[in-house]
Amino acid sequence: MAGGDDEVLRPDWLSKTLAGVLLGLVLAFGVSGLLSLALSPMATSSRNQLVMWSVMPVWMGVLGGCFFFRTGPRAWLWLGGATVLTWGAFLLLRNL
Image 1 (tube, rainbow, N blue to C red):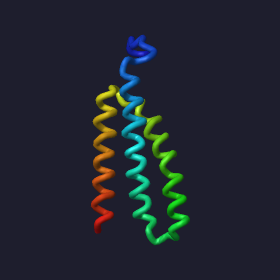
Image 2 (cartoon, rainbow, N blue to C red):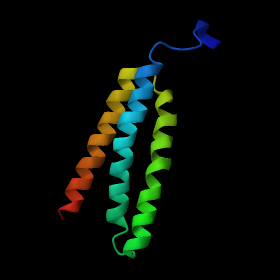
Image 3 (cartoon, rainbow, N blue to C red):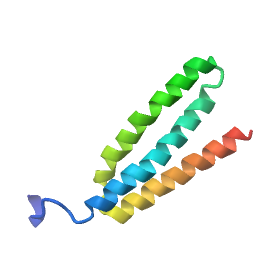
């Protein structure tokens, strides 16, 4: 490997995976909530289906992307910050 890094499996893969699974799910729920607010003029049944089916692609995207972080704590920090911002925006916009 380039740069002399001969480790095939880094020791922090578990923390990255847990960050992607746990925080990714909460983040995906927040994104689906924001999507629901953005699509409020749409018919309820269509909107509910779209919001429901949007959770899994967002969650899998976050789970796949969590391995691009250099360390596990960075994954927790960035995904945690994104989750807090997403839910803060959702709660703020919901009450407007």
